[in-house]
Image (cartoon, rainbow, N blue to C red; front, side):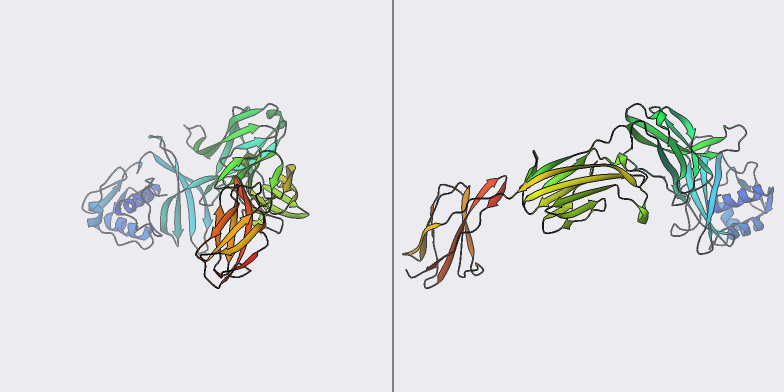
Length: 470
C-alpha cells in the first residue's frame, strides 16, 4: 500500500500522484525488497514505472522533495532507504476484486499505533503492474433490519440478525465481528461468518425473557493483527442500534383535514369526500428486518382499504391509488406507516394493516369505519323576476345551513357568462342581481352551504329563466 495519508488521493478524476508520494512509495518498495542503497537514476526510473500515466522523474525533482524518515538523497548519485522506511502507520490488506477492464482493486485499512488515529479504509487500483488510482473509501454497515430505527424483538423469542461492513460495495472476509448488549446480557460474542452481510448472530430466547426499552446493541468490526505484542485484533468500525423487547401492539388513528389544517379524529364515523390522515401506531420500523432488498424485497407492510366491495392496497412503495369508491394518497415521513385516505361514497370502510418480518407474516390489525355522505338541505326560489334597472330580484326559502350560493349565466348549462354570488348569512332570504344586459335571457339557481371545518354544499335548485326587458 501507499502512504497512509488519506489526503494523497490520485487517479481517475482525482489528479496525478504528487512527487512526495511517488518517492515515498518507491522507498517503501525497495525497503520491502531488502535494498537500502539505490542509484539515483534507478530510483527515479522506478518512480515513473510504478504509476500509470506518471511523468518522468529526475534527480532535480527528487532533490526538491522534503526528505523524511523513509529515504535520503545525497544530491549526487545515491538514494538511501532508511531502516523502518516510514512511521507508525501500518496498512492491513483486506482483499481484492477483479474489475471488468482487467484491473484489480485492492482494499486495505490504515492504523496508526503511535497516535491512535481512527482507522480508515483505502482502495488501490492496479493494472498491468502499474498503480492506476489510490483513494480513501467510505464504509457503511449493511443490515437485515431498518438502520436508525433500532430493533424490536417479541418477548421470549429468538431472532437472527445480520450485519457487515461494506467498502464501496466490497465485503471483506478478513473482517470479523462481535456483538454486545448490556441490556440483553450479550458480552462481546462472535457471530458466525455470513457471505452476504459478513456476520450472523442469533439472539436466543433466554436473553429476551424480560422487557427492554431503549437498550443498546453494538456491532463491532475487527481486523486480525499479527503483531506479537498486540491482542490479536484491532477495531476498525462499529455501530450502535437501539433494542427493545416488547409486544407488537397495533392500532389505527387519524387526523381529519379541515381546510389547510388537520384536527385529531374521534370515533368511527367518516364523511364521504373528506380526507383523513391515518397512522398505523405500534408499527415502527424497528419491526422491519429480514425482509430482503432489491427485487427480492418483501414489503414491510400492507394497508388494505375496502369500501363497497372494492379494495386498494398500499405498501411501502409509495404511490397514489384510486378507484370509484376511495383514494389513497402518500402520507409523510415518520416513525410508522401512514396514508391519506379519502372515501368518495358512503358505506363501510374496512382498513386492514399487515406487518412482515423475515419475509413472513408478523401481525395484522383491522378496523371498520362508517362513511356517511354529509347532506345539506336544499333551498329553492320563492320568486325570481326582472325589475326596473336591468335587475333580477330573488327570494328564497330559509334553511338550516350557514349561507347560500347564487349562480347565474346566459345558458342553462351555466357555461356562458357564468357568475357566482355567495351569501354568508343564513337569515338572508333575498338578493338583487344588478348590471345585467337588456334583452338577454338569464338562468338562475341557488344552493345552500354549511361550514363544519370543511365546507359542504347541497345540490343546486332547479334553474329559473328570466328575460331582461326592463
